[in-house]
Image (tube, rainbow, N blue to C red; front, side, top):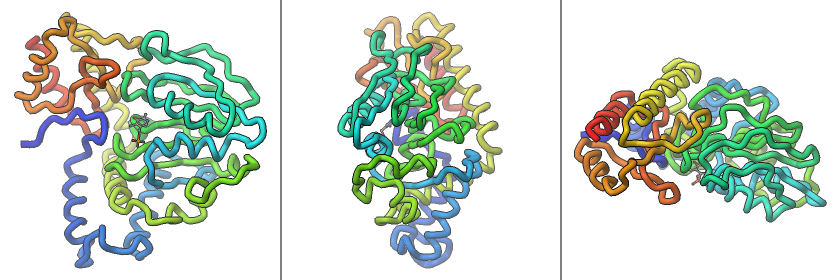
Amino acid sequence: MKKHNFSAGPSILPQEVFEKASQAILDFDNTGLSLIEISHRSKEFVAVYNKAVALVKEILEVPSTHEVLFLQGGASTQFLMSAINLIKKDNGKAAYINTGSWSTKAAKEAKNFGEVIEVASSADTNHNYIPKGYEIPTDVDLVHFTSNNTIFGTQFQAYPETEAPLVADMSSDIFSKPVDVSKFGIIYAGAQKNLGPAGATLVIVKKDILGNTGRAIPSMLDYQVQIKGESMFNTPPVFAIYVSMLNLEYMKAQGGLKVIAKANEEKAAMLYQEIDNNPSFVNHVAKEDRSLMNVVFLLNDTSRDAEFLDACTAAGISNVKGHRSVGGFRASIYNAMPKESVQALINIMKKF
Ligand SMILES: *Cc1c(COP(=O)(O)O)cnc(C)c1O
């Protein structure tokens, strides 16, 4: 029986996507060949790539000022790639908002290329809120933030305002709701949360912010090289791109991001309502900053943690153990998570 999968990543995708993907591994579009044994430059795969890019542009309403890429190396490579492409060689500066482990890692990579200014941080309370009311210097080459904090269960509801290129790690909330892409210099996301399997990284980059650093950029890390090569400077992650394309088709058929956002709001509301009303559980995140994707919660009586996990396992609920830096539990309820699975978790919580 299929489990209720609350994994934070790699994570749940629609069952229909898994079925189509397994078929393409055996025989891709009646070609008599597997998707993963054909050339990435074949007309069949180039059509897949072009469709994936076109669907990203359509679903996110990407303006013509921006390019869409499918790269490798995960969000973790984008930590340094965004920095090396934007921070000026001489006296370069970058502003970072520290909302947890991922933004800390991003800032660490940027330090290789210039001065990093931490303009705001939620470290004082173990990242259970999104900083507000901070000043961003005007003379920086980029402003970086993590839109959804997968580990700490917080999410930006409004984005930082700046004239500098705004760079966002949207790994865990891309495609969960509409976004005004025109406001961003770079949006990047590892595919494995809400888009597809691990192995592809979606990058949306504004063309006119590139080529201004005065530094030499290694080819694989140069967005301009990747744009020119249409993500095929080297062999792209063909399977991950294909499955992402299938999931993008699925999102479009669902009615797009407004419809998806509404479903996500409903699922998160169900779960937070149970946490708030059930005296056995607590969530320490500032209410207005709660993530709609990763719901973290604790048992008031932590001596019952193992008992709760056992009850979940018995009900076919998997991957609700919290990240080691927060403890307790985390239910990741990405787009593909059915309402029934959220209800199954709530039913177990009610018994506590
Ligand atoms: C999962 C995650 C990452 C790490 O992505 P990789 O693809 O493993 O490098 C980075 N940032 C956020 C917000 C994430 O959720």
